[in-house]
Length: 225
Image (cartoon, rainbow, N blue to C red; front, top):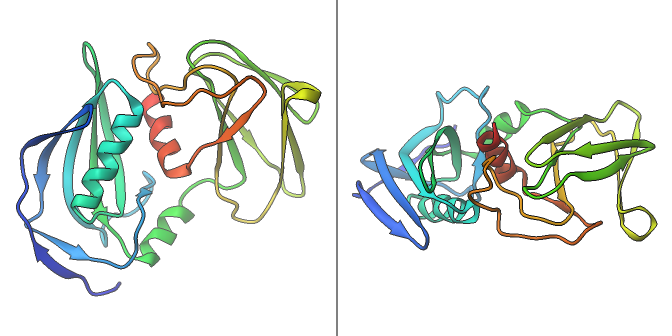
């Protein structure tokens, strides 16, 4: 593991960013200076022994986009490049999400990604209506707020279509150690709560297919459970 240069910092308490409240529940007294940027989701199977713990935070909002922005803003402020989902609590008018922030070098990032599934596609249902699509010739109906899992078999080519001839089609092929793929499609909002209390902040027209960034899609999937 690379040597970490520790930089002291002081920040503990409660602050507000845009339309979300962020509370720092716990923090380290110093943070490492790392070259690896970005923000990765830490798989639940990942051994955290070599990860450098930075902070435990709680973000409260009724908007999933604001939860993501709060996570990103806090991670940048603390020089964190990895996060782990801990739990959520549904409050009266918003959701409280607890996360832990870490720093990790390139090797640890690869190990965490290796602990994830491979050659799997997840489809997220939106809040408003049942979505109909095809995987090859199989017709699938995805109810609001449901998640559909599809595994690509070795040697298989997959055709995904939404909206027929006038819609959109994407293709995938089995590849060794291929990362998980996440899709949302159809008209309507996509939110992590069954009551539709906060939305991901995008609306896609009927027939279109949108691929979601995997690290944040993992978080969305955890919030939907």
